[in-house]
Image 1 (tube, helix red, strand yellow):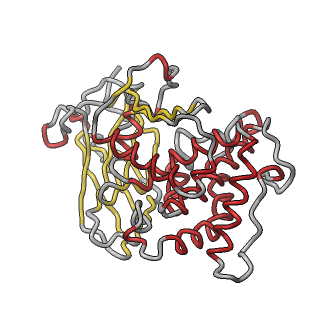
Image 2 (cartoon, one colour; image 1 turned 90 degrees about the vertical axis):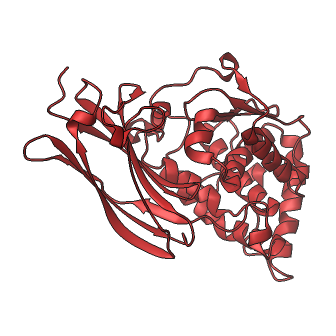
Length: 354
């Protein structure tokens, strides 16, 4: 799970492409759904193409000319079979392509205003649509040369495009929550020099557009269960994770509090893995051994409309097949196929010897 979180990726062109898999079929269908909506039809005609890249790192990117790249690691550990999450990722990359083609902004703008008027049911729209030519995170003049403003604008385009195409806008917020405070996030100390804004700020700006996007979704797809992306995803959040050694240093005691909502009928799971350097830590103990031989802790339980509890793991230190004492613990909270939250933290194990 965590190998992908630690290494800068090589260029997409240096990695091989995976084709003819169910993942390709799913992603390509979501891409078609996005582009065949009224808003999608205003996008530049770029010969859109999806590339699934054989790489276990976590990355999604595009070349701005219609090619969208998603790594196998992004699919395996985050997106899976969840169409709404695929839509959030693909729509964001489509948004970047639109931003690079200003001639298509007026068409997008006009179609979006029409969607907002329809959602308002003849009443005044909730809010005038942000014209791309005058949009920014601070309601100033949109500056295409500012990389952070490009990210905010691509998020905005993505949420509106998703909503009209039948993918609940809550999926876009879920994407922001995944990476907020993660190893993917921009360190606060480097914020001024970074090209990407912090994920917390992206979520805050996306929330400002959520109500409008939700109104468009509800207007176009009054029966959410019949939309391409289905109903809104469940919500879940990991609390403060506590890791300590037992008094005799023979065990790691790991407590994981969490809360969840709207997870009725979805089997839930808390899973944890360890990373040493850039590799998953293998397990010497078959009780904690995943199919790929890595050490994995798991606890499963039924989902519910509202759930709050704490999971406790007791892991013998001898099960960790590594001599490195400084490790990273990665904890996942999932509901069905949906990743709800991910936390990362350093752990030092005193009995492991270099």
